[in-house]
Image (cartoon, rainbow over all chains, first blue to last red; front, top):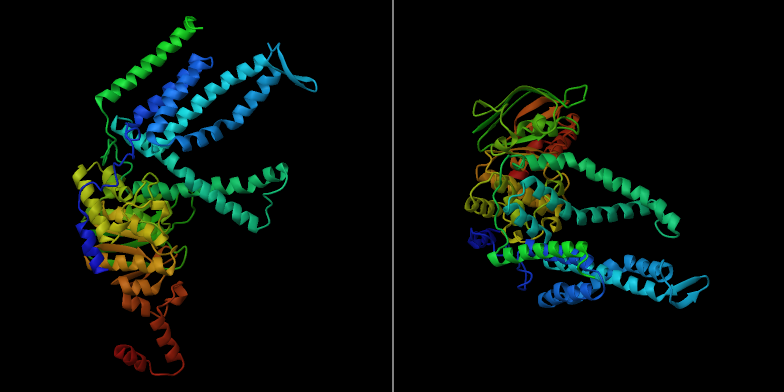
Length: 273
Length: 271
């Protein structure tokens, strides 16, 4: 014990090297706000530009190329496809068979007719959905949420807002874990969580109740623990580190914002097809 | 540095009866005081009152006087008081800030909130991790640590605030034997370094190992107080809901069986 204590005393007194590490590639190391701006503007642009070629180009330039550079393409494809799948299927089915202006028959299943116009429209929507889910997934795969919150706090949002944002993100795994424990506990007492859809739905009630009530019951103790650590002190607090930012990145962010606003104006004015 | 409670009574908001009545208690610098008593005897309430959370954070009605070095703390806001009296709770997980990704950031949370200069925050954080012997946990995710490790981390987070007194409400109650040993060893080292600690504790062996003085509560009143050795040997202890240490129980049993207890003392001294 004594020896390890003496060893640890050598650990140093500066910022530990594991803090402030923002990722393995240059894209990871971009300022979180820059990555957030890229994700938001490309998602908005994909909706605004319409058609098939526009979203496809956006997908290639703003999602696939950066994902390649960041070495996360495989994860990106898997996650964004899973993310988009439920809505993609319903878009495809609804438009293929029930597109109001559908004329050209492709094939027919009983009374419903699949039309070429419907297919074309569905593919256009799908391109937008893929661009949006790709942009969001790329951000998520290359940025820790806490890094974005630290960056925003450095830029001046209040410590409280930053805390709430950060705690909400960090609490999700804890809630999932708690739900798992309660599910096991209720199963041990004979709750049926498998079988028909109706049975599963009924099984949710005795799980969701304790998850929410349990979290509320903890609030008082958690609040006191925060107060005991100076959380209620008014004014700004000290930050240990913040993600780097460069003038060039600020320029890119503004350029993207101006660009996407211009695009929306152009589309609304009906200049582009 | 002395924390003084004089004639302190407290009633929770909405409660019809007082949870504490006429409690006098003094916690001097460098002293480790134990707080024993049955469940519902007022241990937790006394901890909350001594640390100022009751009534600041949870409302309720406080009577009597609480002072630090003679200065009344009534008007102190919590963030000021928390630099004089730090409080730790039973549940290791509920004390985590929920925003720290590493144990290092968890310990730094308090000093960051106090807006101390960055170098001061870093120095205090390393210092607190070293004091608790958990520097090697610095990079770990706090939520992935064992209960005992989380409890050490929570105490480190308090120490980083550099309070003159620590109030710990049953810090080992939710821990397994290994976690209990981890925490009591750390507290013993803190005590040896001259920290002043008020620790609520049900385990008499822990009280015997850590504290020099013990206060026993029953129904919100102090019913027994004195040197830990004397209090733990007091025959009224079992009826106050505190199980005496094994050695004391054995001595009572031997005496009951007509065996000379002096033999046991000799045997213990020989061992």
